[in-house]
Each structure stands twice: as structure tokens, then as C-alpha cells.
Image 1 (tube, rainbow, N blue to C red):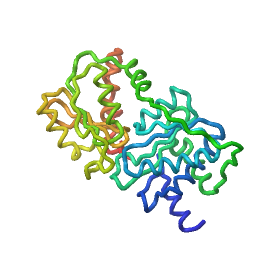
Image 2 (image 1 turned 90 degrees about the horizontal axis):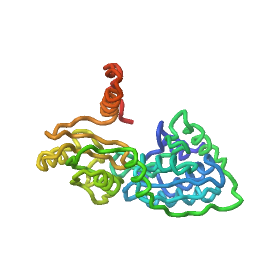
Image 3 (image 1 turned 120 degrees about the vertical axis):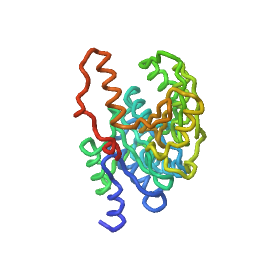
Length: 293
């Protein structure tokens, strides 16, 4: 294995493939990874592709798509679309897999690829990442009989209909959303508005540089959201990272309420109480630092 090949192998992480664009990630790397993932999913399979708003996203998505189609996969392009939303589309619409071009909460010079299984779960370690890395290393790509096709799909309405059919809002909440220039710029405000909330959105334009900030949802990133919640006299503020797989909450007094496993534990406790089940043990609450990849 050459030094370049070894360096590329080091980009494979527990949950994604990630690096700095122009240094670690190039269009040729994206094409090779596309061939890898196409071989992993299988010839003739339908694979959904999406990206966040990073400036390098489109060129890397094109390279990925070229690789996927070259080994016989048919690509369904969702354009700019959140990671979690893409995963749900894969599951509910019975696609064979998906890939999101994103480096999640990392700064703008980073990018990456998040592969998704047909069951809507990320191909993390133990769920396919080891096989993906092996195919990439050995370059054992499918020799396709037919080149795959590319189609575009606007999945926004289908996704919103799906989640709004499952979620009911009991009152007209006043909500401030900080989409941080990322992939939730359209989906999140539309979802809350259609659910009957009064929505104010900040940082709501596509910004591949994220206004020079880290597109994360840690407390130090949300000064603007805290201020907006208080000024708007909102009930809650919600911030999303670049690809929408992380959210953080601010209460009506502008206080940071956490993200990740903290809010999951709170939601779980509320659900169990409504079902008449006793409260969660404090042993079930995971320290918030463990939510960071």
C-alpha cells in the first residue's frame, strides 16, 4: 500500500469518511469511494445521494455519483437535504442505500461521506464500515454490465407529510430556529410552520462557509439564538448543525438546555410518564460529552 493509499484509509472513521477538502478529499477520491459504495450496495441498486451546503459539496457529490453509476448503481439525487431526513427517506421509500456528502458539525474546510444502509441506519463500525473500508483498500469493484442512471427527486413534501403525520403539536408555540446556514434551511422552518407554530428563523440562507463559524450546536455557538429567543419572547429556540443530525434547545429565558443524549433522555422520560411508566433512573442519562463523535 502506498503512502497516499494509507492516508486515504485513515479517513475512514467509526461513523463516516471525513477529511479536509483539497488535502484529503478530491474528486478522484470521491469517484473511488463511489465505486466502493456501489460495490457494497450492489449492481442495479437504487442509492439516494444528498449533501449539506458546503462549497465543496457539489463537486464531491458529482464525483461520488460518477463512481456509483460506473459500477451499475442508479442514483437518486435529493440535492441539499439533511442527513436524518435522507435516512428516513431511504427507509420509508425502500431505497437500497444512501450517501450524504457532509462533515456534519466540522468547520467549512472539512467534508465527508455518510453511508446509510437500506434500513435507514448509518453504516458505522459493526454495521458495514469495515467491509466498505476493505473494498476501498483492495479496489475490488464491481464490473458493471450497464452504467447506472441519475434521477433527481424533491423529497421535501414527502418527508414533511411523513413526520407531520406522526407528530401533533398541542398549541401554537412561538419558535426561533437557527439553521446555521446548513441543510435544514428549508425543511425545518416549513415543518414547524405546517405544524402550527409561529416561526422565526435566523441564519436561514444557504452559506457554505457558515459565516466563518463552526456549524455546531454547542452552547458557545448559540449566543445569537439565545438573544433572539428572549427578544422574540419565544417559547423555545432550536439550533441545527450543518447537516441537521444534531439539534440543541434554548428555553424561553434564553438558557441552553443541551443536545444529544440529554434531550433524548428528557423526551424518553416525558414519553414514559405519559404512558404511565415510572420515571427513568438517573443511571440512564448519558453525559452530554458522549454525544459528540
